[in-house]
Image (cartoon, rainbow, N blue to C red; front, side, top):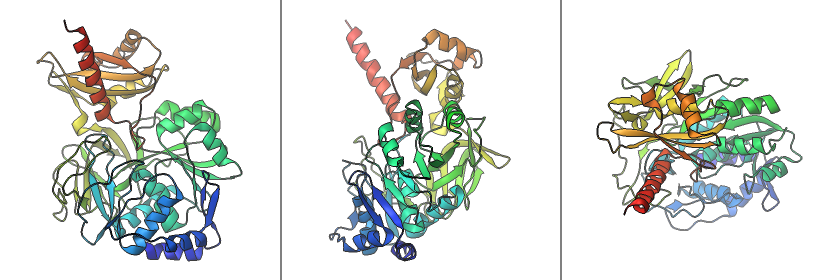
Length: 451
């Protein structure tokens, strides 16, 4: 199915530019790309593992589609997982982002991949005359859905760049009159600070992590460019999109439901997503390795595939994905209120880390922050609140600033100031990974202070 759709796109746009690779200086029309894909031969393995940020990634996908292989995109240097081939109806495996736990593999049919691409193009208004600038990972769900499938299934040209550094984006935009630029908040911050956002960017997208209101407003003020917040999940593709033309006033708002996507909130406050783009289910056999080397044994199609509505957060199947995101839907807009599993228990009272982050980010000297809970040495407190912050302001000043809005029990007890919040290979800030780093840091400090 997917290869036939690609054949139609390549035929209709045969003489038009499809792909430009700035690292090698090569470029392909749709006709050229079709011929190059036809010439690629794949071995007898059931899987094709496209890797890296290059035209070879695109060609590997085309070869897999043509040959009936299962596509499993990998980050550069990532080891292919040891898994059995899924049922014939499933032709694509995605790694989840591992922001809240170990990565899992999600299996998709051709129809589900095509539906997500259709929803994204229709909702965002992607245009053939506004090429996508490929700065985000092709292997990540965001990059595959916003760059690869729009190119191959809808004829949206792609310009691949070797680096997301400010100088690279300046070079990439040279000679382009109009561009679409999908990125993550950390990229937008770096480009804004370096005054590197090209004037030719007509459609600016941000996903993978919450987009700070201050950054959205700063970019709009300086460039008259609205960054559109995009919210999705590996298990179901696009969920909501902020199509407004002016900056948001509420950081919790992630926009309206994507076209052809139905959203609801379950009794426990978790959001449920229904659409033709929802994956078939989780798929893993012997083991599935995440990007930091841990392993997660699980049964094939763990969850509720084929059994109707999922019963637990983080479960998918039967055309529905029940997220672990706590949400509200009001006046047609979606507001995220944290994750069910991230809530911090302080002496029996629970608070979402996002609630604390949103307050702290209002301080002009805080550019980034991340909040999580760690076990308390005082059993009665259960957990203590930790904040990792990018700021040159003093801890006590920030604490007093927060107490103007938050009750005392929600004020962080521990502060860790860093130069930047490092992201994982998918461009996301992983609360799980930062919690592990903090605990390792504290363990090391304890061992040094021990007699």
